[in-house]
Image 1 (tube, rainbow, N blue to C red):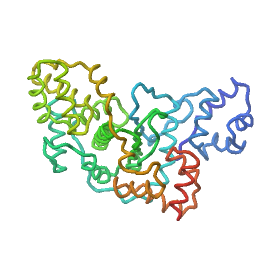
Image 2: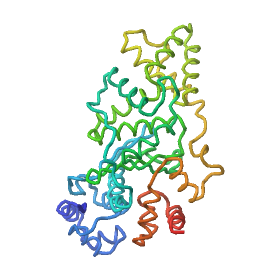
Image 3: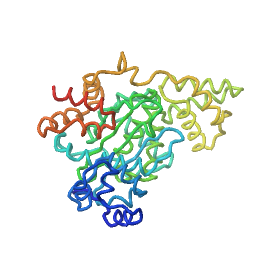
Image 4: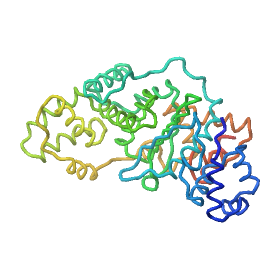
Length: 373
């Protein structure tokens, strides 16, 4: 179904601003016919034009875009302190709409998918869910979980990983989840320019979304995904041992050392270790740790290790061929393979690739050229 704009709302905004459709077209940087087509519902603006419309007309997403039963459902893995705005949602929803033509070029949908029935935040239920997933993956409850262990689960459940290189500081989000309800396909954008401990948590978080599609786009879904990620990466069996070891320490400093050692062994953040130990203590009616949350953040920020992109690519930045090969071999993703077929069959330009990957014109053109080689 073609996504459409709220023409009546746009017309009212134009009247208030004293603009004609022709003047709006000039300000957006498109032809008057393009605006006419948008208003009639025969075409839909690209993400950058949609953002410009929203800013010029001072309309939010729900005011600008007509509701649609099968609209993309989006969720962000935000950076600390980042605030999700209408502009972020508009951009992600537009990316989702643009991904729909790619779906026919992906492998056929799986007949069976893994699903967590009756997802709950209750401690025992969460631990049981984490245990079931680890058993499915063939990973013992005390073994460190690597992100490579769970990659196959995405492809097995029609979730397409899109590895991205968005930098460390310039973006609002480090991961983006786009579910296309009608097509029953999920696209998961993961920023490789992040620390391995964060990357593993995001992948576990996204896996929870894949297992609980009915919670997509809800606060309950985000809460469950965060709790599931912690339980999967640092389950009760490990948390119990870490708690007992930490409890024997007489100072907060030595207790912190225990948390640091467990975090390093499992390649996860000290904050995840701390939260899972605290959850274990609370569920079992045991005393809390001496260490406080602010002390965890202070110690954590001092030593973060390498970025995933630094581990995967030497030197940086990678050539387009290396990024495409990484998506296919490391992340078992069919994204670029499907994109190659679509570009060749339809003659789609580099601008499309730039928009759906949310990269620079230069990077979009380089990837486009590589895919058409």
